[in-house]
Amino acid sequence: MAAPILVTGGTGTLGRQVVPLLRDAGQRVRVLSRHEHPASEGVEYVTADLLANEGVERAVAGAETILHLAGGPKGDVEATRNLVRAAAEAGARHLVLISVIGADRVPVGYFRMKHGTEAAVAGSGIPWTTLRAAQFHDLVLMVLRKMAKLPAVPAPKQVRLEPVDARDVAARLAELALGSPAGLVPDLPGPTVYAAPDLVRSYLGATATRRPVLPLPLPPRAGRVYREGGNLAAEGVTRGARSWEDFLRERVSA
Image 1: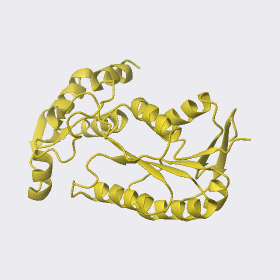
Image 2 (image 1 turned 180 degrees about the vertical axis):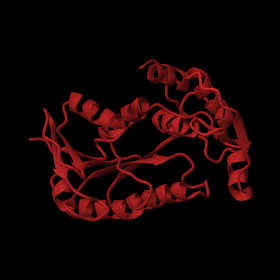
Image 3 (image 1 turned 135 degrees about the horizontal axis):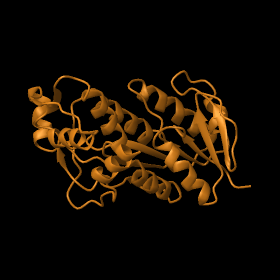
Image 4 (image 1 turned 180 degrees about the horizontal axis):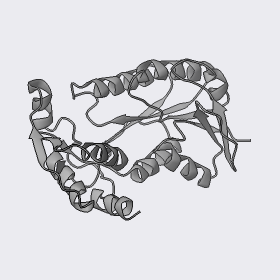
């Protein structure tokens, strides 16, 4: 029987898109989750906690390919180190990581943390592939929904974003997981670059919400990086197909 592909974060925004693609490709899929889930056709669930380093050895046992999609607001580096340590001991042959565009350039805590996870994977001794993607449409929508409840919606005027659809990222990750280790592959941004105030206005218009938009400056160091596009993909990369406008229409109409 073929070895299963292990997916961490398989129940999250991205994982819920990746797992069916792998299953439809004829792969056995094992999902690592901190909570118990009943098995479904072609998918088994293993309860483990990467940050607490509990149950990780059982999760990686027999898995030759691992997609590391799990993440949180803190502790990602330590969680990734626990995963790669167990995976190396178990003889994993391919480790695929999702990261963020600008992880090596943007002087903000989250980006630094993601760069730390990249380093943990690259130094694991396991052949690896890392994909840096832009912010997901889902994340942008969640942030805008919260900010739109304020009397005035803040929007950093120096920030440009190129949000990408999680379905496009999932398709690329499934392709990479089924292929050979490739190191750091080209970034995956969305189809369009937006100034942050324009994203805010598009949401307010789509939801018929009346709020003033308050452009805000950034601290000098971070502001310089964002002004120079340090959080954006390089020219010439292949971009995701699904636009922010299409995504917004789907969600607002739903």
